[in-house]
Amino acid sequence: MPDRRIRSITKTVTWRTVAFIITGIVSYVFTGNFFVSAAIAGVDSVAKLFSYYFHERVWEHVSFGKKKIKASDFEDLNEAQKEKLFKRLKELGYVE
View: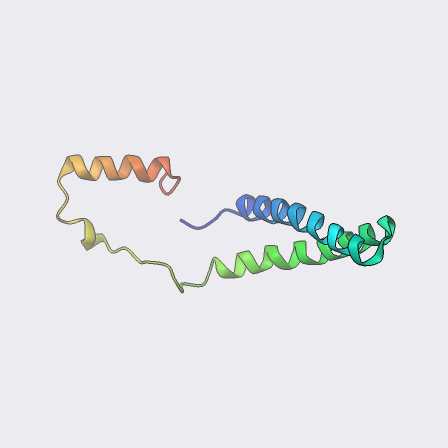
């Protein structure tokens, strides 16, 4: 199932929050100045926020590392197994 844009946006924001804190701490260690380190972390986060989002969206279209499932893979399943599989796929968000 492809990631929806809202998932990519949420992942982007949460990761950048963590990275902002790390960059701020490292910048403060090197500069000793809170305002300079906050500025460095802010500029870094904005630039990387957009680049990460587009990176995520591009990778959504890359088939490398994704396993393709064929309809014939399910031919040997009985009806109960198919129903159980369908229910689980629905729970995981792969089927609406």
